[in-house]
Every structure is written in C-alpha cells, then in structure tokens.
Length: 257
Image (cartoon, rainbow, N blue to C red):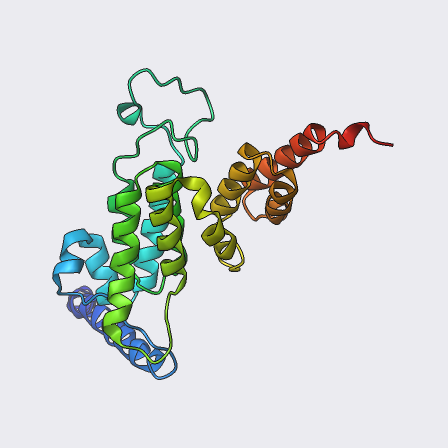
C-alpha cells in the first residue's frame, strides 16, 4: 500500500515541479521588467528562427535569454580558439598554438555563431562588437561584420527609444566601412574612439597597436599597447609585454643610460 502511494505521488511531483519552475520564471521576468528595459528579438519571429537552435528555445522560454546567449558566446570562443584542419587554407602553415587571432584558419562558422549570439540577447553588446572586430580586422570579412552591426543597429532603431542605445555599433561600423573603402590606416580615427569605451575588446586595441607599429609610430603604439597590460586575458597581457619590449628595442631606449 505504501509503495503504491509513493508511486502515485511521484507521478505528479515532477510535473508539479516543472510547472512551478515555469511559473516562477515568468514571475521573475515580470518583476525584472519593472526595473529594466528588455527589448529582444521575439521568440516566434523570422530573425529568431533563422539562428536559434532547440536548446536556445527552451532556455528563452523559461526567461533565461541572457544565459542562452552567454552559452553561445562561450561556444564561439572555444570554436575561435581552436584549429580546425578542414578550415585551413591550402598552403598555410599552422604551428602548435596558432589559431585565434592569427588569420590562418578560415573559421567558416564564425559569422553564424556571431549572429546567433547577438540575436539571442540584443543587450549583449560586447559580443556583437567583439565578433565584428574579429570578422573585419582578423578574418578580413568586412561584409559579414557590417551585416552583424547593421542588424544590431536596425533592431535598436526600430525600438524608437528616447536615448541612443548601442551607439558603439555605429562607431565600429564606420571604422570597418572606412577600412573597406580606403584601407585600414584610414579607419584609425574611429578605432581611437572605440578604444576609449570601457568595454572595448582587447583585440581592437591590439589591432590598432599593430597598425601604429607598421606605420612606425611607436609613441602611439606604446600608448595603445599599455592599455592591455592589465587585461583580464593572459594572452593579451603577454602580447602587450612583448610589444612594449619590441618598441623599447626599436626606439633605442634600451641603449640609453
């Protein structure tokens, strides 16, 4: 008798917990919306269906849109930080440790990852600018970077908000467009503005420093490189130290007393 009661009880406990969790998620969303403005790609829309996967749908249904986007961003970094033998251009020589930021691997899926992440959470501005920078300045795929940024800009423009939102996208778009039309050196003025933002990707600072290095403008190169000395990413901290040492040697400072 006791076994039967336990079996009957367990039959409705799981659905009840599921329903309770679902209702709690909806309640939390409603409470959060009283204090924050969440405007995002609608769940049942063409833009969402073009990029989302089954796992994204369930996370967002329960109100975890930000978590869904964070997971995709982590997957993107894992993908972009690895060497994929089937995506290496013929004739390219790739050594151990090469991959992210080298331009040696095509990363064919990078754009699809980027668009998926950006559309899952429109408030995740860093992901959009980071990936646009990677596509444009590392992978030399300006058209995809421009599409990613204009997709974000068009979305926020359609919201008709009182204050500008995600204005960094316009700045990155200008820099990439100028680079495409006039060459990378011509986009310096926009990149200089971009690195002033606290959430500017370290990659952009590293790229701008490289441009100054090629132009033999070591004073500006050192200024920009120094911004990455305290980067949270050990790779960029290492690159910053190496570049500063190189600049130190090139300018002859190492021989001064």
